[in-house]
Image 1: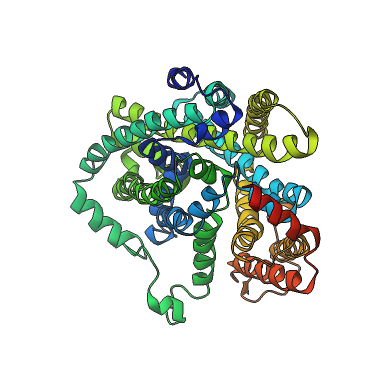
Image 2: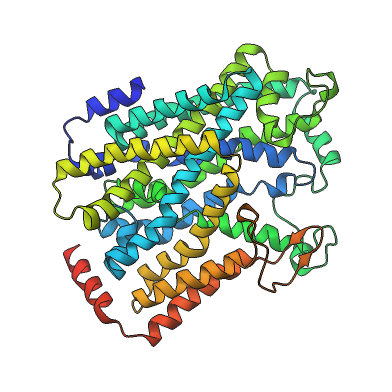
Length: 494
């Protein structure tokens, strides 16, 4: 909170809405890399990586987030960052507004907004559950205090406060998890012993990627499961690009070159930051949990906090869990600000209050941060399936927004008819694979529907590719109309 206040006062000369949203487009490169890394290395990233490594049914090969998100940031830097930054947009939804008009952009804004809100709620819930389980703290209090602090400093200084606190939070994560690893490994006889036990215990051992035989269908240990692995890998890589939380940092860069650099370096740092979580998962596999206070191994989702609690001294455990809290806040503040930015800039400004002043925009940003933060907190407190809802939103971002973004930037003939058709096709094909959250059974005859393992056909990637192809075909078959004029006018203006 103090760091956020300091940042808001230090940059008080930049009192415009652009200062709140994009730090006046003068974010130093080193701070940009820190905030890019800290945003991706959230509580779900750290806890989820340890969970996958510890889970005997999954193992290291299913810890896809570290390299998946790293590739996502690197590809975003190579193919999207320079192009979007060069146009001087304020949010990535501006791409659609320029190409298709305000109303179509407002439709595409919906999955982006909901995804950010559910992301915030999911990681707040994860923090509350972790602290309530480990320390016996009140779940509601843990969530409310964490959310209040993150929302409070974000309202003070916008992106400046988020960026400065991300630097501090990333340092906490590195120190808190870094000093806990030697203690945890020492508990099981050192690194060599941990590696040996893991290789003997986990079926895929130290494989980061499936074998070539798995992709050719000659590995019976994988079977059709390789398609599920590939589906989620592509979802992380390409579905990790069309998020405002990413493009907010790209657009805050001082130059096009800086935007590309912070994306690529942020991707590399993101992968490196997974190493502590992987090692904690390794330590958990090698530990004799029958001698712990639990008496048995914990659930995979709780392995990281319990490794810290059972395998390190109390002070080290407290610092490690503080690192988890820091990771959660570094993601919550970024996500809440991103959602508030899209709401204010792409809905309030063009549709609800045309002609509003810069002061009104700035005030609306602050109220939106408070409102969206409150909604995310309420969801974290009331819904038991927040993670499932976030996974669904991640699917929709991949299936709907990724093909839309690619074609809006790289396919000159795309128009709003194609955009709407692509949305509809993507939704039908995605929900055709079923959705347990809403009780929707698969209603399309996808192949590879195993009675035990469930649907193993990569229907998410299929839906994304079908949506992309639909946009191209429909755009070529329909008149360009006012959409192309809108694009030309706005491009010249930019």
